[in-house]
Amino acid sequence: MNSSKFVAIITGIFSILLAIAYLLLVQIIDFRGEMKPAPISEAEQPVSIVTPFYTNN
Image (cartoon, rainbow, N blue to C red):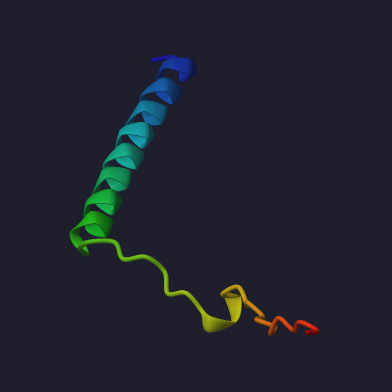
């Protein structure tokens, strides 16, 4: 067996193992349940300033 064929086989095995590990990781993350949105901090909310409207009668 020449070295290029050996490298191709090792690379293929590594690729398959990486794909299986990725699929397992995705399944574990998906198993945790429904994704919830991140909490919104009060400091990041826009501030509105209301000023009274004065008229000179």
